[in-house]
Amino acid sequence: QVQLVESGGGLVQAGGSLRLSCAASGSIFSRNAMTWYRQAPGKQRELVATITTGGGTNYADSVRGRFTISRDNANNTVYLQMQSLKPEDTAVYYCYALTPWATGYWGQGTQVTVSS
Image (cartoon, rainbow, N blue to C red; front, side, top):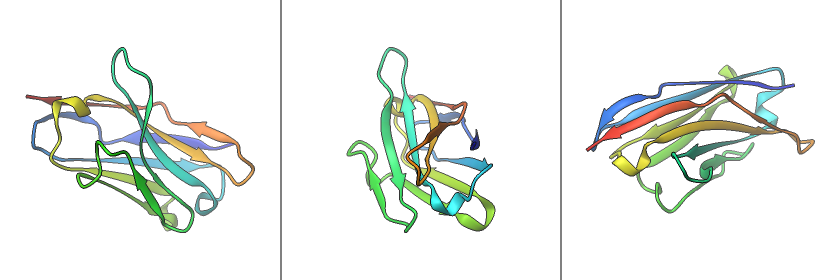
């Protein structure tokens, strides 16, 4: 069982920055691929960024160059640094862990609101 707790969301003006954190417990964190998803009202949940156990990263086209995913295995935490935020980045952001046994776990989400 993996527990994930996101934090760092809030209200920010367009062009601003936020850093989301996702603290994990209940498993060997370094073995999990970690992903940030987001879901805007009335829209499907979409992948934002992912980081592998080896540190490889991948980003949605809509955030590439503005967002950076990173992980701190010593502190069982994954981060999403968001810069140059746009109103269309407004969503609930979720952390997702995929274990080596192909079991997935979700966090409860954190709201990000970008005002124009």
